Length: 165
Image (cartoon, helix red, strand yellow):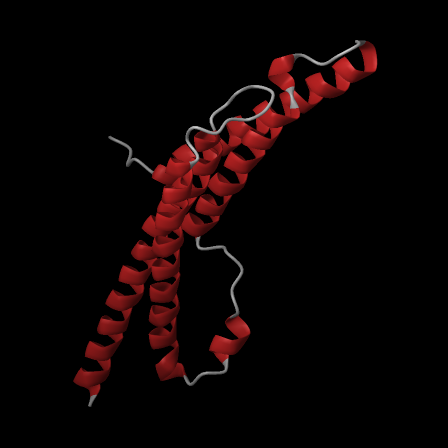
């Protein structure tokens, strides 16, 4: 039997690799500062920062894929039952529009900063800034899926209500 490909598993594995790499880099920095005169160039704070930024954006995408971002359920729960699905659709639509707009701006930022580089390792700023674009695109993908699911659930509920009347 062929297993279904799950993109979130790739994101989780990537996050795992980033955490392991970050811990290793930090261990090397601490060890080298304690026992040697200087730290290796490849284990600088720039690499740790780069890994941490990627980890944050991949983590945000994982949270979107699991639909576990913090939300204001208290306010939505105050609405009448028949308005809650509509409110959910509006919220997901607003999130999608926001992610798309911010993603476009971040892509322009990353592209314009492609010739700038970090001070110590000469890594292009593009690789730092593109992580935010990847995070926004991935979150957009998952929130569009949630929006479609909410719309289809709303339509099914409407059909059930119309047949009962």
